[in-house]
Length: 276
Length: 222
Image 1 (tube, helix red, strand yellow):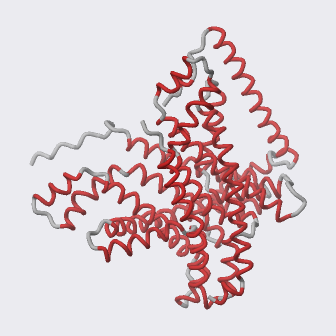
Image 2 (cartoon, chains in turn purple, yellow):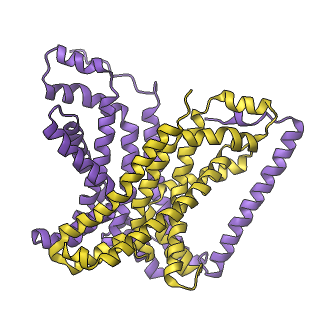
Image 3 (cartoon, one colour):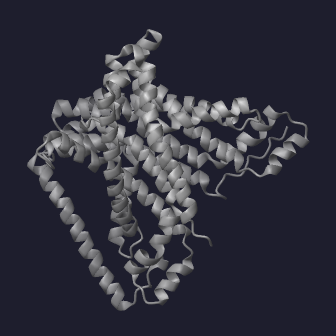
């Protein structure tokens, strides 16, 4: 998307002026970057000794890879469970029966409006008093991720189903399908397809939110990076930059995937049926 | 209910902190987000590149990491002092982190709002001789704002809930108090959780309703 209509196409003088201004802005930004650089330099955050550990194989093996594994484990468990939760509650909210629809709506709206951290605290600190067992930090994190993101996914899926042309449902009934079949075979597959980009964006949110695990001591990437690496080499800033970079790469890849899937006309043609 | 009643004062104080964090960060995010939007559509390549890079980084980093970075990195490590009082200092560090993160989302919303403004608006402005800054500030941005009232409301609600993460910078807001209460009054876990949840519902519900009403009122009929 370009916004070139907000300004005139520059003439020769304008081009020159824009070049000068671009240079000035670049200089100002570089100056800002330099100030940050100097401040970090004063605290010796650029010292090779602080960056070198990030390249060492043992640091990756002890901190970064296990941390990444923890983050991904929580995120994958969260995605699967939140997906199931979302499908169930989206279907329930679309039910014809008020006694199914209304409670489902209350549950979804409640978990959407409670901060995720409170859900994690509830599970982690409250579990002993409630069920007599201390749940693991992993379980508490997945519990929170599931309920919160599941509710959001339920809303995404519901919006997807509601956006389908009415004829889809009517045609399905007309060929004699039952309610469950209409939902399962006709509406949900189409809704999931149109809502795939929104779902993937929500998965990015979920992945980022899994970092909350560090507050209850779950062993994930941010924890290993800032409390593990930084504690050993006192390099908070290099470690934070590396961890952020890992998250950014993963999330941008997911973003790109969502973008790819949402672009019409790029879908691979369906494979021709096998000749039997 | 006993715990919530006996500790009512600290609970209310914690929620007051949540409200203050939200209000100040929301204001900051709105200003920075608008500025970033203007940069992203500017005729100067360097401004566009800088804003795009910033938004990409801020959007894809976990807020927990952003706040830890402001707390440990800017605060503890670089010795950024915004106040002599530790609590006030932590408050402003949290505001910086929340603003840095939320403004990227404000920018994304506003930019999609700019897409809803018909091309003719900017063209008419230009034909009257308005330059880039005035076209944006007087003609297109105001209409973009009106188109994205509802998404901005969602961002505000998300921000309200995100302030709970300010506990990693040491701000005594709602989540800190809830953790303390749950640990002290183990027998009233459900009541305490529901109480704090109700607090957030009470904060967010009116926001949702108000922004829904506002977005209908502000909608540009075309």
